[in-house]
Each structure stands twice: as structure tokens, then as C-alpha cells.
Length: 256
Length: 377
Image 1: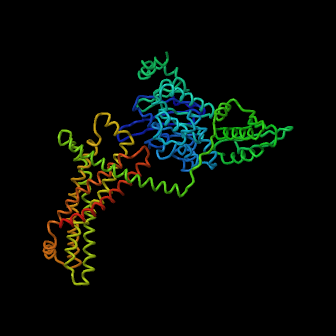
Image 2: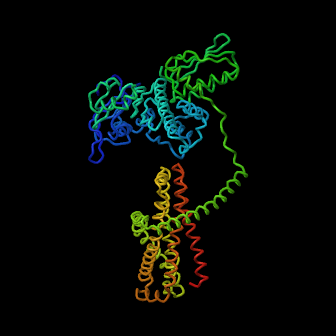
Image 3: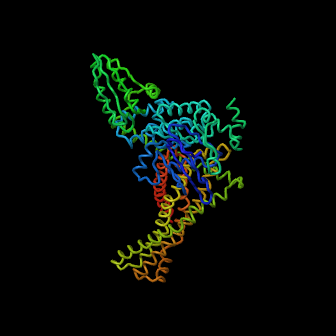
């Protein structure tokens, strides 16, 4: 599972994260390959979001090593880190839109900080990004508190994609969306991955997403990756949690 | 290949080929805009123009959009513009940006005198609304209080005690410290100036009346407005933002009864206690300075104090305290419930809560001064 893949964009080695005395991640290894969509599953509370936040650098780790784009994030100086941060986008579970900025300002925020472009291009790119995530230009001048849950996810994705990153972290992107909306979202991620050559790290509980959007799946359990591979590998696995997850009542409904 | 983006012009018969090459990505967005801006000026110069993108090594949304924008602008100028050499990888991206509709840019309304007057009018009108909201909240709290009196089991003792700890017990050190210092200052200033007339000892009169009647309670009320009023607004505001207040309502609870009544009650109980402690502390500080700096020994100070002030001064202070607490609490709760979805709104309402709270406390103090003067207290 931790085997040396040709060109890993994220390489996580022997990561441990601890809250007080509870070990959440314990010697975890994971590779994410360039250009793939990796679905990351596991029981609620297993530490999926913790791993995501550790890779992004929001949670300190006790031990181990994280390389993103081949750069060791611990050894990197501030400028290198900022360079790396510019190349990834993050979609948080609750969207994490800036509540006092309009949708337009939210999407433009990272662009304005990092690029030297005209107001006109900023506005056009905003509309383009909104279109890409399936929203009308009229949404641009609304505030986050005036959006529905699904719209918040879409705007947050548009913001994560604002700088055309190479790597996107999605934390439960389809939770809280209706099945059609979730399907569209998966399709959208897939299209963007194809067109932009994105690598996607997606924490999800949505079996449909795993089937339709993901190239590979990694499963987290008791602080480690218990399995990683294609959906077929997962279905063939004899691990009790995996059997229940992929052959349970809800799973059958998806396959049928 | 992965270098700076370029856009070369190559004449082809009566047409023109614009050969894009390099990395057309966000990193170079500034340069790209320049390139495309220059090329847009070709509009109308040739009957047909090809945009050849076969040499583009990397393309993202920024690059794709700028190519599309160039095509559109050229087409608008009557040129037959086409994009050629698009690799399969990027065609879906270009299709995606092709669907983008750019509308006319919204312009901010210009600042005019009429606009300024309009805003002034609206804020004056808003003042009336604030007043109505305050009266409404007072009514709601009294009604909830009445209901609780009829059904005492609905009274939230734990919550009230918790808030009492927050606004009263934990406020004691800072209130005592500040009033002590103010007492010291009044006393020092009094002695310094009264000494010129040989009236040192009258500083005790001034200190007693000021502290017990005005400064003590006013100062404590201002501190409580800054300390607890803002906390109430922030608490209620963030609960409102996260729909917690709506959740309470759907479970059949009255937010006024559950959240606001205990807070109000805690404040109304706390302020007289704090004002009393503050007055004691200020008198102590004043007395200390009078003794050490002014040479008025403690015995003389107490004797003079007993003569100078009557129980009326103390009663006036104590009557004012709970009323001021109610004003602070009501303002804080109204502002808290007025918070909307954004973090900015929370900040604005917390500020408004403290500013309005302090303002109204001072206005109330003025009203009380007139009232007590006219009844001869």
C-alpha cells in the first residue's frame, strides 16, 4: 500500500498524530499519485479529516514525514511553503467561506493576493469559475449567509480552484447535497480533473462518488491505512469493515 | 516548452495566425493579459485570424479564458476568428469557458449629496426602530418573568447562577481595583486643590457624595457594559448565526425564557453588588490617600464622612444600579439577536451593544439626577 508509486504528489511516511494521550494516527503511510482521484474512506471519527488537516499543516504531528510535490514540508522555509500552498486548493467540510465577503470577493481573494491581474480579468475569471461549478453569474454578489448548503459547497470549490491548483483536497464534498447534485458534483470533479490535470484527495462517505469519481481508494482504520487500491480490490477484500462497507445494505443499493 | 507564454503573429495570405506558445497558466496571468490585450487591437485589421494553440505546453482556466476572450473580441470586430490546434486534453476546458457569459460590469452608484442625505435619513429612522426593539425586548423579558413567576419550575436556576458567576464573581477583582484607583485619584486631586483654601477636610464630603451617588455606580455600570454586555451580545449572536436559537424555538422553548431571562436576572443582581463593592473600595482608596498624602487621619476621615453623607446618597446609588443593569442587559440582548450571518455583523453588533449600553447608562444617570433632585433626595 505504501509501495513506491512512480510519481507520488503526496508522500506521507510514518505519520503520528496525538491529541492528549489518544493516538489518532499511528505510523500511517500513504501515497497519492499525480493525476488521480483518491477516495479516502473510513469509519466516522477514524481521523480522515485529521489526516487531511495534518497534510495541509493545520494540525501538528508527533512524528513522521510529509512531502507534497516532492518538498518536505517540515524542512521547507516559509517562502517555499507559501509556494506549495499556492499550488493546492482546499474545500473544507462546511465550506469555510469568508462570511463578511460576497461570493465574488471570496473567489477573488486568493487570486488578488497572488496574481497581478486587472479587475476585468478578475471578474471574468470569477464568472468562469462559477460557471464551472454550475452556478449562475447572479450568485456572485450574494453573501455566504444567503446561499443554500449545496451552493456553499460549489462556491467553496470555486474558491479552492481559483488559482488553478494542481492538487485539491476535498473534505466530504458531496455531504449535504441531493443525489442529483452529488452526482453532478462528482461529474464536475471528474471533468475538472481531466481538463486541469488535477490530483484530487477526496475524503468521502458517498459510495456513489467512490464508484463514479475515484480512481483509487484508501481506507483508514485504527490510525493506519488498512487497504488501498481500486474499487474492485476493495470489494474483494476480506477485511470485516470493508466487507460491511462495500457489501452492506446501502452498498447494494448503489451497485444494483 | 514550459517557459514564459508568447503570442507570435504570422501572416498567412490575407489572414493572420496568432501562435500561442509556452505556459498559459495562472502564474503568468499578468503577462498573458498584456499579450491578449495587444492582440485584441488587431480587431478589424484582417478578414480572418487563426489562433493556433498547438504549441501551448500548459493551459488552465486563466489561459483558456484569455484565448476565448481574444477570440470573442476579434469576432466582435468582424473578423472570422478560429481557435486551431487544440489538443484533446484541453478542448473540454475551452468548451467550458466558451459557456461563460460576461455581463456588463456593475458600477457602484456615485457618491452624491442626495445619497448622503438618504443615508442620514435612514440612520435616523433606524434610531426609532432601535428604540422600539428595546421596548419590545423589555416587554418580552417582563412577560417571560411573569410566566416564570406563575410557574416557578420553569425558572433556570443553574443558568442564572452560572451567569452570576461570570458577571459578578469574576468581575469583582477588576471592579475593586479600578474603583480603588479612582477613589485615590479623586482624593488626591481634591486635597491638592482644596488645600489652597485650607479646606483639606472637605475632600471627604466630595469623595463620599461623588462615590456613593454618581461615580461609583456609573463607573461600575460602564465597566459591566464593556465586560458583560459585549459578552452577552457575542454569545447570543454566535448562537443566532449557527441557528442554535432557531433550534431552541423548534423544540418548544422560548429563547427569551431560556437564554435572556437568566442573563438579565444575573446582571440585575450583579450590578448593585458590584456597585456596593466599588463604592467601598473607592472610599477606602480615597481615605488611604487622604491619610498618607493629605494628613487626614482615619478617625477624622470617618467622623467627617458620617457627618457629610446621609443614607440617601447610598440609597440613590443602589436604586440606580439595577435599572442600569436592565438597560445594559436589554441593549446587549437586542443587539445579540440582531446579528446576521456574517462575522462582520457579529463584530458590528458587539460594538453597538457596548456603545449604546454606555450611552444609555449615562442618559439614565442624567434622568435620575433630575428625578432625585426634584423629590429632594
